[in-house]
Length: 277
Image (tube, rainbow, N blue to C red; front, side, top):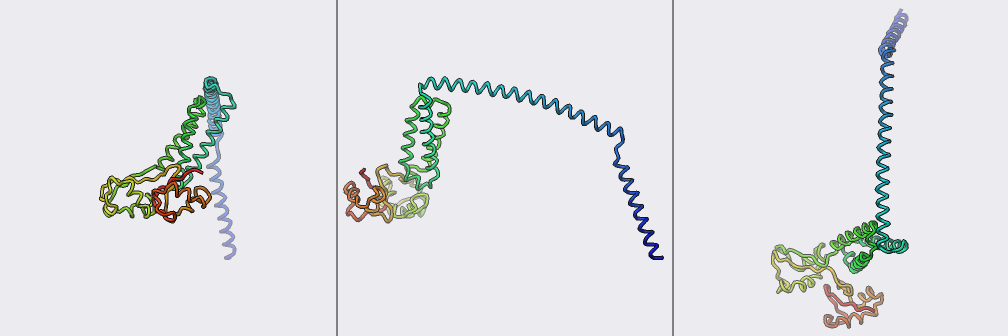
C-alpha cells in the first residue's frame, strides 16, 4: 500500500510539471499577427539602416574629396616653397638628415640626470649654435623642416632650464655656507662652499656670517675649457679626465699657477682653466 501511494504521487507530480510546461509554452507562443508585425518592424529598420549607410557613404566621399583637395594645395605650396629655396632634393634630404641627427642628440641629452647634463652644457650650446645656423638656410622654410626646428628649439629651451648657469638661494634662519653647499639642489657637497662665497663677495664680508633673506647667487655651470674641482680631485686625476693622460697635469698647473699654490694641492670649488692640447 505504501509503495502504491509513492507511485501515484510520482505520476501526479509528472502530470503537474507537464501541465506547467504546456502552459509556459502557450504563453510564449507568438501569434501570426504578432509575427507579421515584428517582421514589418525589422524590415523597416533594415530599410532605414540602408538609407543611413548611403547617406554616410556620401558624407565619407565628400570628406575624402575635401581631404584630397587640401592635400593638393599642400603639395602645390611645398613645390612652390621648394622652388623658392633654390635647393635640390638631395640638398633637402641632407638638411633633413642633419636636423634629425641633432634631434636624436637632444633626446640623448634629455635622458641624462641634471648633474650629468650640467657637465654636457657645452655640447648643448654647440647643438643650439648649429640649429641657429641651419635656420639661416632657405630650406628651413619648408613646413616639415620648420616643424622639426621648432621641436628642437623647444627641447633646447627645456634642457637649458634643467641645466642653468646659476641659481639663486634665499637664505633662511640657521643657514650657513657649508650647509647650503651640501643641499642636493645646490652642490650636494659641503666642501663646495667657497664657490658660493667667491660668487657673492659683494654680499658676504665674512664667510661665517650670512643672514636670513639674503639672496645668494649660486654658480652652477663652468666654461667650455674649464674644470670645477670637487672633493678628492688632484691634478693628475683631472688631467686623466680631460686629456685621458695623467702625465699632462703640468699643463693644467702652468695655466693656473696664480691660484694653485702647490702642484699637489687643489681645493674643492676651484675653477681651473683647461688649455687645449
